[in-house]
Structure formats: C-alpha cells, structure tokens
Image (cartoon, one colour):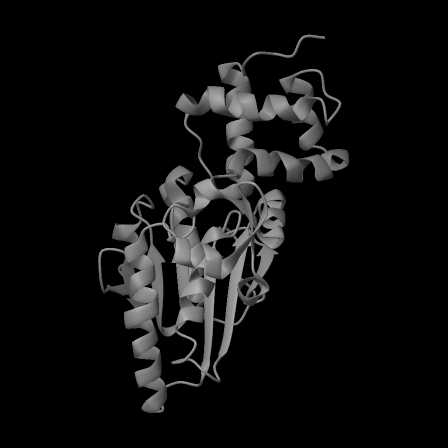
Amino acid sequence: MKEPERLTPQQFELFQKFIYERCGIKIDLSKITLVSNRIRRRLQPANCSDFGSYYQFIASKPGAAELVDFIDAITTNETSFLRTPSNFEWLKNDFVSELIRDRAEGKRESSLRVWSAACSSGEEAYSIAMCLSEASVSLRGWSIQIMGTDISESSLKLARDAVYRKRTMQELDDAKVRRYFSEVSPGEFHLRPAITEMVKFKNHNLMKPMLEKPFDCIWLRNVLIYFDRESKAKVIDNLVRSMVSGGYLVVGPSEGVYDMLGMLQKRGTFLYQKQ
C-alpha cells in the first residue's frame, strides 16, 4: 500500500495538540511537511497503514513503546561541540574563578553540579566537561557532577555511545580533537573516557520538576523555540527551582524567555543569576 504523502490540516492539528500535551512543544502549521516526513518514517515500524491509524495507535496503551519513538522522531535536533564559544569561555574562566574565590572565602563547599537541559546527543554536556577538565588544576579535589537530560531516548543513546562525526566538531581545533577523541573509523570519533566519565545522562521532560539536588549552573540553549509562552514559563519555573542560591542560568539567543526571567539578575547577554 502506498504511504500517505502529507498530513491533512485536520490530522496535523490532532498531532500538534498531542505533542503539546506531552512535551509542551507547539509546532506551527508551517512545519506540516517536516512533521509529515518524520511521522511517515514511523508508519512501517509501527505496522500502521496511514497517519490516522498511527495516531490512534500512539494514543492507546498498546502504543506506549511506539510513543517513545514518536517523540524521538519529532524532537530530535542537531547540535555541536562548543557551540557559541563565548558561553564556554565564561564557564572555564569567570565561573571557575568565582567558584575558587567563594570556596576560599568559605561561602561554598568544594563541589559543583552542572545540568545540560535538553542535551540532545550530548555535545553540550561533554563540552562543559571539556572546559572543567581544562580547569582541573584549579578544581583539584572538587566533586564535579555534570548531568545531561533529554526527552529523546535515541538522543540519549547517542550521547552515551559518544561517537561523533567531524561536522559536529567545527569549533574544536586539531589539538582538542587529538586530546579528547580517538578516530574509530574514517570521519568518526569516539570521545575519550576521561571526558565521558564526567557526565551522566537521564531521560527528563522539562515540563516536569527535576527531582535531583539543586544545580550550581544550568544550561538551556536552543531548546524552547517551539514552546509557547505558557510552556516556556513552566519550564523556567522548574529550572529556577532546581538552582542553588547564587546559581547561574545560561540561555541561548532563540529561547524567547528574556522577559520571563525577572526573578533572576541579568549578568550578561546569555547569563542570569539566582539571588
């Protein structure tokens, strides 16, 4: 049987509402072709003949496993190492210097927790680990915990496998590539254990509270572009609740949340601090 070419506007509206209710992501009608293509690839694995039967399946109890793959297909995005280098320069210089100063003044313990929210395939979380590794002399003896979370299980698997192609490493010079990666096949590089062992990954929906100890620094970049204001506000509230007093939130230019951060002190174009 020939596969359907594209969702009808009515079908798109059903999937749009379904995605929003589960992920907080509001996908505009202009994305109908993209959504159609991603769902079409799931029809055969789910043994569904058309979009309508697929919708009925993922909305049912027997379709719970397929629902995970559906969310993966819709939400997966590309990223890269050291994306927006100025963010990482702040991390390994100003942020680390502040940590050392506060520890010397007795204002904090020798421990650090960083969260890469919506980490996709792990490049951001591992970039954070690289920066903190480069500051290892200053942070000798510190307990450092880096967590990467995402709603996509397939993205988390890629993150845990830690095998990347050269195109995701454009911001890394040759010395960093040699230091942090081993080439496992032409054009494919495996991140070395010294970095992968610094990061733990788990599945998490940003629309729900994080049930972990508070974090000193949270990264939220290139995540909320498809969220509406209500969903964005809920995510921001969840994140702020997960920050220690004095903790930092690093945001991307496309989040559209700057007018929602009144409870935080602006420290830079991308940087906010909890008082």
